[in-house]
Structures are given as C-alpha cells and as structure tokens.
Length: 115
Image 1: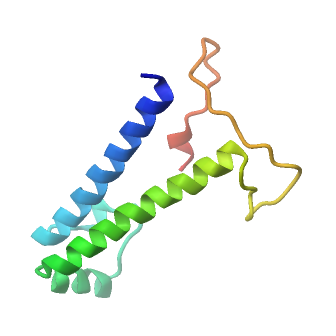
Image 2 (image 1 turned 90 degrees about the vertical axis):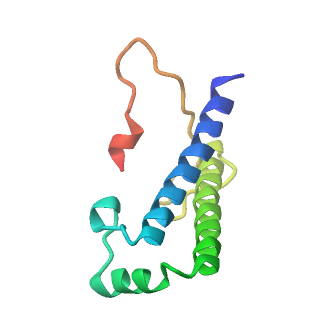
Image 3 (image 1 turned 120 degrees about the vertical axis):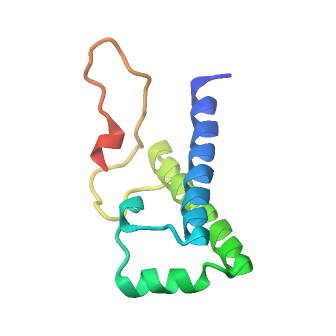
C-alpha cells in the first residue's frame, strides 16, 4: 500500500476518533473548554448539557459533524490537487501544491504547527 493511501486511511480514522470522542464527552456531560480548540460560551455549554440525553439528536449531529469534517478535507485536497482555486487569497495562476515525503535536507515544513 502506498503512503498516500495509508495517510488517507489514517485521516479517516483520526476524524472518526475525534468526532466520536467529542460527542461521547457531550453524552457523559464531561465536555469542557479544555477539550476544544474553539471555546464555547456558557450558554452553549448549558445547551449541550440539556441535549446530552437526546440520543437521536446527538447521533444525527455526530454523523453530520463527521461528514462536514470529511467534506472540508475533500475541498482542501481539491485545492492541493489544483482542481479548484483559492478564493480567500486570490493571486497568480493556481496549479495546486504537492506534498512530498520528508527528505534528508531537514527543511520539511511541519503543517500541523501552522494551525
């Protein structure tokens, strides 16, 4: 199996694990701001606690969230592949970007550090 396919399988699993973990925390009433990259206000936290026992609603939201995250990656990969153009910061002709495996030069950007 090539590295791209391996990475995509990992990505799918990472999304699934993280979405499930967040919604499990909501179900257990254990979701705190420290578990989130983007804080919820007091009213939002209160609302989450109120719906934490509605299993159908939570399941629907979990599936919707999972789908939305994968859609974001799909659109980002289309941007990298050059089949769509940047919209927020337009510029010269966009041909896409190529991600490559790390080389020996040590100059490989760490994308996760850029978030």
